Image: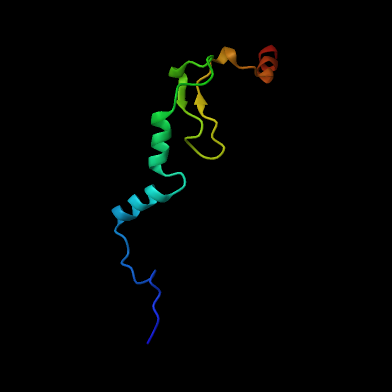
Length: 86
């Protein structure tokens, strides 16, 4: 009598079932990401116009800080001043 591994006795999941399972159980599932984006409050920084926010922090990878369009005049880029004077 042979012993069978119950994990290998299961039928493979169809592609839609596998996608649904992956989205449900992954630590940063697509569903969780959508919920974070949908429920995200406006910017906590009152100086940031909410219309300029393209992505909110926490909706991407571990290094995601969000994306905000910043007017060029608000940037402090010292090397640009050096190039302008050259």
